[in-house]
Each structure stands twice: as C-alpha cells, then as structure tokens.
Length: 152
Image (cartoon, rainbow, N blue to C red; front, side, top):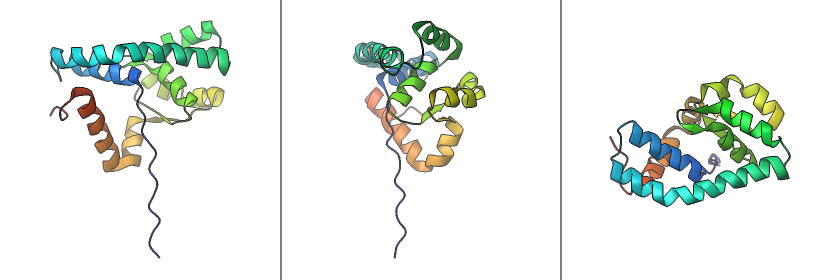
C-alpha cells in the first residue's frame, strides 16, 4: 500500500491582493511602470467591487462588526502592503486560511481568531507548510500578473 498523497489547499488570491502586490513590486523598483500600469488598469475595477462585497458581507450579512468597527479595524491593520483587515475578512468569507506578514495582525492573531474565527498564519509558516509547491504557486501568480516570468 502506498502512502496517501497529501491534498494541498487551493490557493486563492483576490484582485485586491493582486493589485496591492503589483503596486508593491512597482514601488520597490522590481517591475517597470508600464507593466504595473497595465496590470493596475486590468485589476482595479474588480478590486473595487471586491472591497464593497467584503464590507457588505462582513457588516450586513454576517454581522461580524458595525460600519464604525469596519473602518477602525481597517485603519489599525493597514500596512505598507495594503488593507490587511479587508483581506482577513475576505479569507473568512471564503473559509480560507489568511496568510500575512502584517506585524499588527500577527501580534493580535489570537484576539482576532477568537472574535472572527478565521485562521491566521505568517508568510514564514506558510512557506514551511507549503514548501516548493507554495513557491511555485507564488511564481505562477506573478507570471499571471506580469505576463512574463517573475523578476529576478
């Protein structure tokens, strides 16, 4: 009898995350303006729609928080990569694990998980868990966004 192959989780990346990723790559000098601008124009309408859908779901449907709390949590957990609280709510909405390197979210991980229920892990934990498959998925995402292989 052979070993049962471990089922790897599907990795879903929202348009919001993709938009913030290419913005970070551009601002850090890793991609040129033209590549950034093309991807931004393609992703921005979907990202705006996603943002409103996540807010509506968290506040009106799931009733996890009020409008005031929504804005406060967004302000508290925003970092240089983007709107981490929105991404956390979106991961809860899709019953997915939230992977982040936001130090504020990681510091408050237990409190957030207790209140909202969504699992939070660091990027480092994710890389250890996923190994080469995780790196391959990230490279595929960057290739999709940029229309070419990941920058060196």
